[in-house]
Image 1 (cartoon, rainbow, N blue to C red):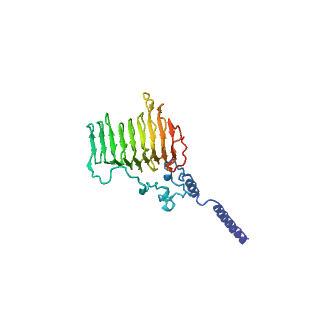
Image 2 (cartoon, rainbow, N blue to C red):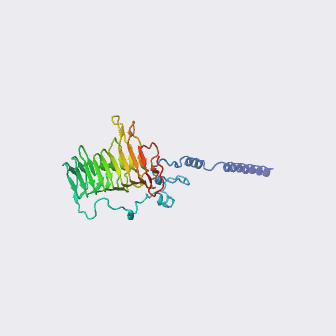
Image 3 (tube, rainbow, N blue to C red):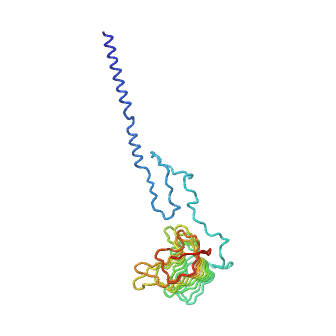
Length: 340
């Protein structure tokens, strides 16, 4: 009888132990691990790509979301980045296609100067290497066979007051925070403007630019660079027989931009003649639209221009296009161009 009781007691102990083991086996071993996994899912990096003006700079969406660790995540390897061709901007035109006859004639000996003020009527400035600004305050000034290099100054050539200037066979390149040439009462022929960080030229009243080459801009961050820009109530403007191709790097806007913001006392702009140019580059290559607050373009003529097929969006900004006379405009390859 004692053996039976001992055996029964032993059996009870064994059964109790087995029950405890079974209960422990059915419970989660590390409940904190499940909390950590849920927290990892909640804090996965967002795949929102945001807004980016340059598609080449938009990051590619991740294909997986790695679990977080206590140490900082290493940057992804270069093998997972987009191909280099998606971030490299379009190269400038091949130099074998570079037209001749623009800028400082070869072999011209230049004299280095800094800032100058042309304050004598009829003054002639010839064969200068300018690393500053020429401010024109007198009428009838001539600048010829001169080279201008921008190093962060506002302008290369600027007119003020009654100043007027004719610019011939000059070369402009580099970083100007406003434009190479500005503002009223100037004419230019056979000039070369390239590598601008902002605008090529600000066009005011009584301006003529002919037979010139404006090309290959390298805009500063935040720029909306135009080759030739009209933004005020101006008239007596001629843009004729120029080659303007500013490229399509981030920050370029238009080869020619006409959109005057005119005050209530001067409700219209013109005449403005855009004739016989070869135009390319920019978001849209050509803008001709009314300005703000009722400002209008009353007398704009857009004729006989040839458009390259290299703009980011198209040759002509299609919304609210304004021109009094439109004729003879084609693509540069001779194909038909439908104007807005």
